[in-house]
Image 1 (cartoon, helix red, strand yellow):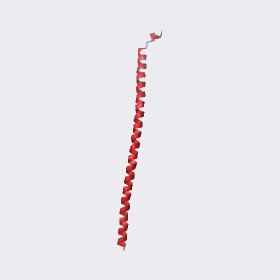
Image 2 (cartoon, rainbow, N blue to C red):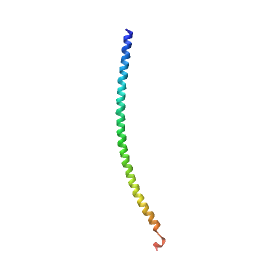
Image 3 (cartoon, one colour):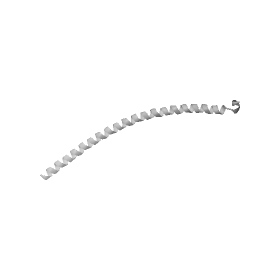
Image 4 (cartoon, rainbow, N blue to C red):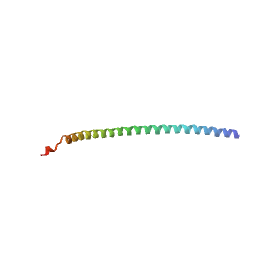
Length: 80
């Protein structure tokens, strides 16, 4: 009688362990895929922001080059 009860508890332990393993795997896959999608959308937003910064810096670079050129071409005699 004790052996039968022990086997039943052992079988129940195996079933609980198997079901828990499956549940953990499903939850892990769900969380991982959701995180991957969020990272992808955040990455796309970051790339857009970085591209806007690059465009603004390029515009400043061009203006600065022109301004430096103006200073290099300037002579004090031009004021008189």
